[in-house]
Length: 572
Image 1: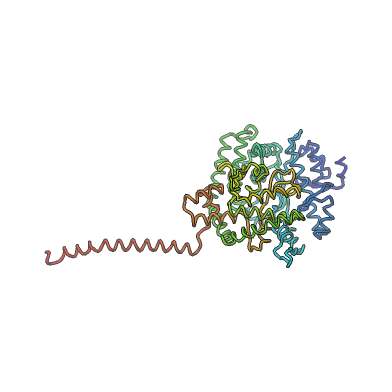
Image 2: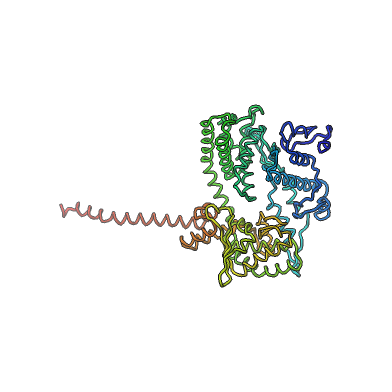
């Protein structure tokens, strides 16, 4: 029996509320009302860290039945470092099982929200070091094969990320004086659920309401973020209240505490844009409560409307900080932008190297070559089309079969799902014959990497690629290019060049093909004026001032001369 693993003399930490209990199974049933047997077993496994399943290595993303032996032999980990990576892999495996259980709509329903509110270590932080430095380094020997970097260099970057807390930081707010000198990294770990089971059920309903009818992985991530932000808001407002007082929303009537929330978030080093999103999601949650659960809120519709009015006011007050933050981000991004010469050099190298990489994969398939091939194809198409990476991630094998072709062999591929599909419809890729062949080759060789049943062209271990930037950075460095690269930097470079060198009508066509409008390009992708441009504008203003002054002086001279002539003695 599972509960026999938990001795009365061996207290365990509850994964839900972070409390320590001698009889954790009883606590889960009585306090958190966990009645689903499968969920109950998984939460106990999460608490005991006992799991016999095969695990994915967080460092190289391969599946192993004995991950501990792989980490010790391949990555040279031992002691506490090995325990950190191993516990991270176990936790992610169990949370994935909880997510699959939730999507199966079990009966009785699940009581916890651990899988919804989890915060993963972002893969791109790991991939920048592991996938680029370890698997595709820029150092090449005379035979053309890369020389791997040392393992300590990789672990110096990966270990801090893996040792970070896996749960959202949803701590109750404290006065500013007590938070002096603190940061989000130094704050203690706090519960991942609200103390009230009723409000937890509303949070679950809010998550399900935020999902579309046919959700993608990105849709589920967005819904999780909305639910997490709503929980942050509730945790802030509930500080100082007992569990008995948190059965309804009456604690939200503290408008003084409500007005302090943006300041508390800013003090915890959240960016103004993140604060804006949190305020919007908190408003969405209150609106959801008002529309569907008004009878259990404990507040009237008018009182909830006043709370919404206050949240909208805080969002407006945050607008100035958001604009200033965006300009700072643009100035910082301008230092990392790649020039058109660099982008042209990359697509020439991709065009030259891709056939050889594809042949090497068919001869001796390795994960390194597969990453490089996907990075080359995605980077090449991004430079030519300016699309977001989600467009390439969502290209399916069926899209290639249904693509339009002309007698010259040119191909038009339509992609249905992407970020702005509601506003711009399907994204399109205009491909020459060789470019269409590259996509078909990727779809063909995916069977060598577990992608026989995966419908997507860009896949990894049979699953759709979610973070394509890692492949792009790998191909960029193997091609011998310097500096950092990302799809957002490519899109920004394209938007800037279109603004400088194209007419308004042509620029509008380019923006529409990139699935955004000109206002979006101005807000996110065009650079702020540099020093020479600002002084050029200053010279224009000075020229206009001087021209106006000269015009006024010229018009006043005839009047003064006529006045002098009328006052002369001869005329008198």
